[in-house]
Structure formats: C-alpha cells, structure tokens
Length: 341
Ligand code: KG4
Ligand code: ZN
Image (cartoon, rainbow, N blue to C red; front, side, top):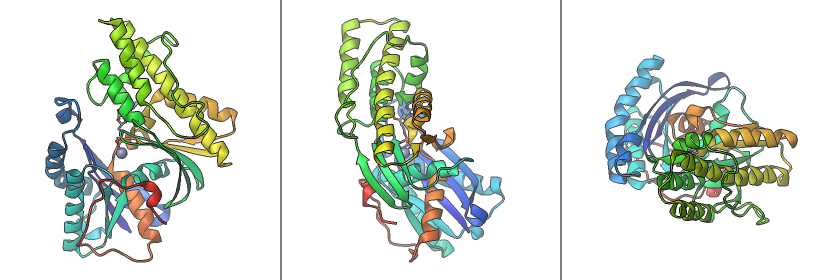
C-alpha cells in the first residue's frame, strides 16, 4: 500500500511517499524550509507560513511523484498533520490532503505531529523496537514518554515553561544569532571553552522527570548584561556553558526515565535531537548503563513529511475503521497522551 504524507504544522512543508509492503520503506520525500523567509522577522510569522505552504505543497508533491516514478492513481491513502501546530498552517495541509483524497476517492489519516517525531527513528536502518522511552525535544515541546506501541504513550515528564528548542532559540537571539538559534548556537559552542562559564542545571535534582529552562535563559541574559560588549570568545564560552547545562539535564533525566521504566532503549526525536553534543553525551552515559540510544537520521530530526507518512502508514495498517475524505478539523493544541492505539 502506498501512503502519501503531508506536513505543514509550522515552517516546513514536507511531502513523502511510504510503501507498507515487505516491512515498509520510504519511497521518496521532499522538503521546503521557510526559515530564510522568517529570519527577517526573528521568528515564525504564522500568516506568512500559511501562504508559503499553499505555494509549496503542489510543486513538492509533483517532485516526489516524479523522483519516485509513482502516479497519483497509485496512492492508497493520504496522511497529514492534524495538530498540534499553527492553526492556519495546519489548515493548508489538511484542506489539501482532504481535497486530493476526495478527488481520488481514497481515505485520509489525520496524524499527531509529535507521534510523527516519536516514530521517526523507525525510518532508520537500525530501528528501535517497542517498548522504549522517547525524549521529544522540539521548538515547542520537551517531553519524556513511555512508548509501549503505536498510540500507547504515557507522559513521564514535561516542561514547566520553555521547551528545549525554545531555550536554544531565545539564547541564540541573546547572542545575536539568526533565528532559529539552535544549530548556530551549537556551532558557536564548539569554539567555546568547557566550564569557562557554569550556568545552573534547572530541576536536575527535582526528584521528578519534568524540565524547566526559562531560568537558564535568564541566567544567560544576566551574564550577557554583566559582560557588556562581548568578543567572539566570550560569546562562544556562553554558548558552550548554556549547551553544557541543558545537555546535562536532558541526559540525566532521560536515562533516569529509562531506568524507572525498567527499559533498555531510549529514542530521541525532534529538532534538538540533531544537537551533536547531546548525542555525544547521551551515547557516552547510556553505554555505561547498558542503554541503547536511537536517533532519527539527521534529515528527519526537524519537521518533515516522511515521519507523517510513516505514522500514517502504521495507523492505517492497524485501523479498525477508515476515515473517508471530506469533513475535517485541525487541532492546534493536542496533548500526545490523549492518543489511543
Ligand atoms: O522539531 P522541530 O523541527 O520543529 C518543531 O516541531 O518545533 O524543532 C525545531 C527546533 C528549533 O528550536 C531549533 O533551534 C532546534 O530544533 N534545533 C536545534 C538544533 N537543530 C535544530 N537545537 C539544538 N541543536 C541543534 N543542532
Ligand atoms: Zn516538529
């Protein structure tokens, strides 16, 4: 069966085709990032995001079909991101998917964006097996989930304020880096001296699996004000100190979560999962505890259509009823733990 996946929840338009036959494989995918367009405003402008999704979806679909040698008539169902995300951006993908599916006479599969992230390591050559603990770290979320199967997600810990990616982006802004700051801050940190500056490790000893990153951002702000005009090395040292603090908290809490659930596998998903220092530290600490860590391929860490096609395919294979194309609603706010198998 051939499943088309469409992602449009924020500032990336993603389109992908996933074939469920013979264990399943990604047939093709294409992505357009709006980052350059939003950079001029220092953050995502929702109305511009929606309009750009309208412009990009059809050309991306044509490209995926041409590259993979497939035709519209071969598609069996269309998966799309129903939420959470920006309402207008979600509506573009949902309306396109429902309209195309209605015209082709095939069903649709509304997908939870975070379920897509969470299952994205299954696209790797060395995929994890259920059950596992998932660390979901994106621009809007920092959650630890116990995952026992598709749709079986128990929330173990959540952020009380800023998400990890949000903390990277806001700190990047304080250091004069372009939006989104995560990857640029991580590059800058590589040139910083370890332990030159030590920032607080928020909630490290809170006794639960929750996170809080807004205090860390404030500590950086205080340091930036104290230093006044900074040279390149001082900026790099701040980036390094910030990254060391956030990585230590993420690593310790994630490994504690795996041990509390008496499991042996950790899956890291979402844009911040691309962070090299996080991967280095996690790999080094996990091996000492006999825990295996799984990451999506770098290209599937940030938002993409492949993870939506995959999540849609897994849902479609398990579905007891199919949703005919037509009526739909998007869910800009949608807790992942509300999902059922
Ligand atoms: O999952 P994602 O693409 O979109 C959301 O669903 O939010 O995540 C985007 C976030 C941004 O905050 C971005 O700065 C962060 O992921 N990010 C990184 C890195 N690459 C992207 N954060 C830290 N280090 C990176 N290398
Ligand atoms: Zn995302």
